[in-house]
Length: 423
Ligand code: GDP
Ligand code: IMO
Ligand code: MG
Image: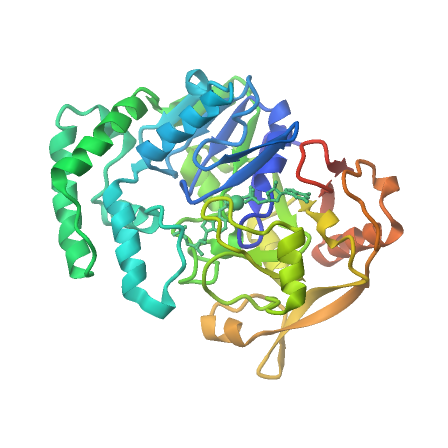
């Protein structure tokens, strides 16, 4: 098996990727973010101290790992500088081992304003974005009107920014949003642009050479497969490919460098923002999961919608991405349950459906078909050994493995770095 690893979220994000990546970063030379931007919130808890990373790779807390922000990421220079500074205040200086792709697109205040104006204009059918400017920035990229990190060093950057702000203001006013003051926006943006320029590198060439030198890679997925712009619950998705394809196009390395694909799956399901969610629990049970799992967004603080484990979604995500093994997180959150339903199919208009329908209306009408498993009704918090897990907890894990045909190799029993069973 290759020493390179890809970590992907297989649900609607927030599966616990940050913790898994932090653990694996110990045996990695280069950690690479490949898509998404500061919409991500990846939590790492070390020695009781919590750090949430948005743009910086979650390998940041390991001194030796080089951290790469790849070309597929959309980078807000101000958010990046704030995050670097916050980490430095906690004694972690990352600048000497951080590389920012010259091909990565820039998220500017215009994109944030457009995100807000677009959401407002959509009214009740809004996506519920993180308002970090992600969609409008990827929109500019695809429309071939964006600015890239490689442009940060251009002598005429202020002129290009002015032209960009003027063009964006025309759209913002069409949407009924508040336009940006050109001078003020420039004044607020340029210092961070200058700092970020210092980090810009030809990361594709760096990674190619690192591959030749036999360096070990860890690719850090952001969001989750059900938020993928092609395979997620479109249009209630993010604007990037969140699966293996996004890792390849967003890093500049080929499929030959991908290695083992690790899918991160929460032992139940959550989603933030709008869109269909077949297993959603709108009752006290959902509230109990939210409370016990502390299910509030790491980026926006919004309450996450909660439901039981949806294995139809996870099997779909495994097949799309050739997942080799699963990290099953937050198993401890299910501790007090006497019975634990897992969704193994949907019923749509009286028909049994075994995969995720592409049609949004169909998915909205899908009713989960549950298989009920036995709970273990005692604490597994902090457990580190497979043999120490109660028989019912092992049976839950083995049921998931059998259903997916994929091995569960990591089990989360708490937020801390060590609160893990490795099989
Ligand atoms: P990410 O976006 O996939 O990195 O996940 P988030 O950081 O947004 O959300 C996961 C939350 O669950 C964080 O607060 C983690 O500290 C926490 N967490 C991760 N793994 C476990 C686990 O196994 N058990 C418990 N109780 N919490 C966990
Ligand atoms: P991590 O990496 C959970 C969701 C938003 C919204 C939709 C589109 O922490 O798992 P966007 O701002 O991307 O245009 O919002 O996607 N979303 C996430 N949900 N975890 C994330 O990242 C998310 N990133 C975006 O809530 O529904
Ligand atoms: Mg998150």
